[in-house]
Length: 327
Image (cartoon, rainbow, N blue to C red):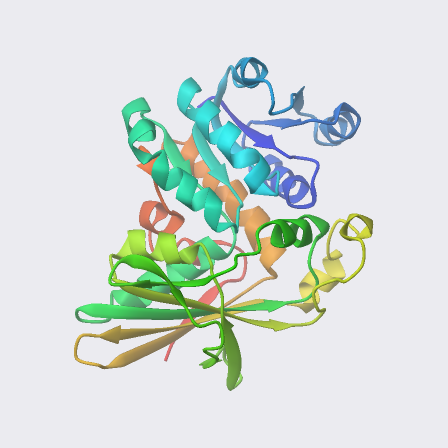
């Protein structure tokens, strides 16, 4: 065991992840571009920090000396994942992030062979909805004989962080995608479907989530559709740079997340299950820190991996107050 580096450590999710990692006794190094904020957080947590930007490959390589695992919390990941994944492969460092952006997962797929050759693991979505939905889907798939289709929905409650809002704006997809016969294809964006998160069925709309890649890779089920139901604050219409870092602790406590899945077998039978957990930002930070701790401790496989496939179907249930209820 050497050290876990958290890049983007002074951002909203990065700060929480760093706090959880420190509390768990994980040896960490804070990293990012702003020395003033890094120095302040370093003093608060009593840990080392390193300052570097992502436009200088040599500086990244130097900064990764003595690092075994890199957790990237610096979104939008369309700006950071490419440089840090490639640097991780060059330097023999396992890569994790908290991305909810499809492009990060496509990038990991494209780098899968190079990562395997280098003995490096790439795990975008080590925390967050990918860990939630992956655990839920895998739990139900085990109860279905010859599963052929997965429809899964995420209930997002409460407000967005500034980083999430900016990432969402920069990653708007023209097409709504689903996985059909193992391939990503465009589908109609108006296919509203009802899911029950535990308090009765509600309307959910189709969205392009990275789980179209991760759930398929983890389960092998050929058809996957992803949906979302949003309650709470609407997407902010103001200048996003003026938003606060993210929801307060009180707001997170008041807005739990849920997920619901239905898995259809070859016989047409549909099996349902639902997940209930803490607020998504709380879950993401805790799950990412725990994933980093476990990878640092030797739990890894080279190449592109998903949390549920690597850590087991019960990974989400090890994070805070998370439960899966079988219908």
